[in-house]
Length: 562
Image 1 (cartoon, helix red, strand yellow):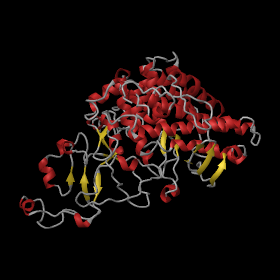
Image 2 (cartoon, rainbow, N blue to C red):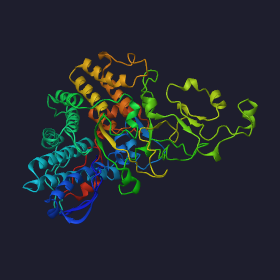
Image 3 (tube, rainbow, N blue to C red):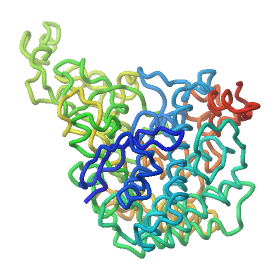
Image 4 (cartoon, helix red, strand yellow):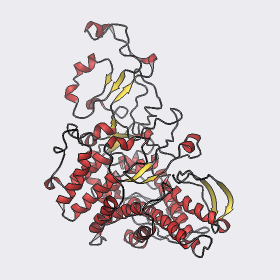
């Protein structure tokens, strides 16, 4: 069971919201023109209000906005040929408070927070559900409010804090230090969630105790790097992740590639995922879905023997891996590059299959005028890093299909991440995919615990956790060779290992800003962003419309112009 996608037009006093939430195979309802004052106090209204709180994850996680703000502008990805938000990667004047992604993320997070506040505030005195059920549902909502506030502070820094429902027009806003938002909202919310959520839910997709422990561990680890850290933040983060790893039934999959099998999404490694429904994304009821299949692909569809199809994806060419990324894996011992990136495209367009030329025939490569390959044969091949020496220009010339080595990569031609491909879409143009967005998984839990151990000086323990991840992905027979020792553990190694394991999964900008390495690493590895990035870019600008609409104005983050 999953929590069902449902559509609401629940009109709070002075606040209209249209929401979609997760996918469960509960009954769909369309509820419109209903006052929250009369609907929320009912048993069904309370349940629907809780479910609606989940919906505000969907405009960020798994769609272009979220990928752009977490993958782009880092050491791992720079810009491809297309896209309208390149300022987020280039760190130039286009990255400002008027940027649509900057504006809409702030807006939607506060909508989610207000929805959570409304549920919490209106639950007081609610007698139509039992106290046990009410407490459990409030724990879900507080988990979500903790997540939304955590996203706010790690994207924007200091921000407006309210734990009360907004009703009517409000033109005043505070600027609360991050330290207070952690202390008053994020940590208490997640501690309440841990104390009151079940270990597992019958409705797949609802918040659980291990998901809350996982999130609080990340929260505390991030705070451990700040000037307002508590002295035991890293130790608490380690303890929480130990509980996630040891106290439940989560297990690493034997095969790293099985994580990306679209038929294997509800697997033993998933701690928390944001749900999408195939029927709803196919029919356009859900306008979001998972769109990762669009952004990480090269332009394969105009190459000889190829046309766009469902299996190979619709290539929007937004994000191109940096040279740093492509050299992270030692492919002689580590399978994760080969299981994360696509290598071969098979001919699907007979009308554009090339023929051998007279000159090529004269060199003995083939028969003049004859097709170089047939339908279903290899049309394009990217051997990937560490393979250049095997593909000299002479070998490429006599090979019937196109081969791109790393000296031939462009903003249109580059290794394509295959984690998010969705061959189940109804047609080749369909933008919404049905994949769930994998927000928390066990592999990340081991790496977060390794970092928490590193922060406490426990290098042996950190190496032990890292090796669990590395051995899982070892080339057969290389399990001992892939292991590291305590002496290998450093912050740079931890960040490299997170990139190897989690590339393209929406963690990178948060990882670099948490560890205060964003500026250094973008300068070192991102050719477009490196020349422009400044120290103040560790937070995004406050949206201009927040500044304009606040009585007396609202402070802009340092370094950005209003």
